[in-house]
Length: 343
Image (cartoon, rainbow, N blue to C red; front, side):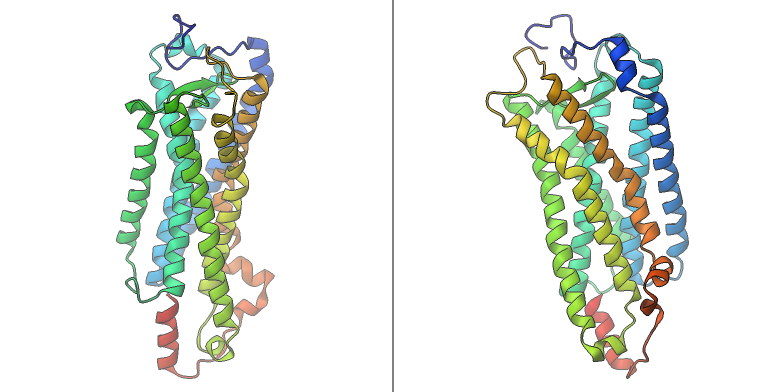
């Protein structure tokens, strides 16, 4: 309960917004179109991924499994959150009347955190897998199986879900956010709210930074190998270039979409004096900024599948014809040795 709101449920803060203002801010047609475009993009990527897995090598099959987990996460995230937000925008229902016990709000808060963190953690996991495969080939099995990759994806989902459930266990709170159509963590100055906000933003930010560092080292290693003329003649480059192009695209999209929101959350909960007053009310400028950064972050779920669709070998060969050229191998044994060392 908020100190001055005995009539309000635990997830409701003073917002002071009229129904007319909500109609101006929350466009149901824009929200519905946004969700449909995102769902269609992810379905297309899943269809292309299903065809690409046939006949692929063990290393590439493992990487495609991670990509499949990422696209599936984005698809489900758009489907679940979109169903709630689009329904709210069309009906403009009073959240207090529909959900007085805050069960829907808490569910949406968990979903927002889970589907927000999962792509960032999966991006860092994919960067780690490629880093070990390229720079430390003997520190892991040469051919990681798709089953092992799916187990890793499930572990990432479990970590994101565990973090999302923390407010239900007393660390932080989920509250209805401006303009009253979605629920998210509370940007308050209480210890629980501050700790959960910092944990969310730091874990997401570290995932992006780790992806950047590992991908940079991996790309530098590949460039060093491919500048060796003998190695370039012994090994086709297509697969490594394709995987790293897709991974770099995913990293850039995640950085652009998520870093503004993560930085804003950390900055707001650490602000002195606190941005949120004792009544639970945030300044209108802060509420609008949070809404804008959240909308930018949701573009990640639409752009992720296109990083795979656009950076496939079939597309890159049209843009960079040299990828279609495969020099003859000097001997079978050196080729196999180099192939094992770069996987």
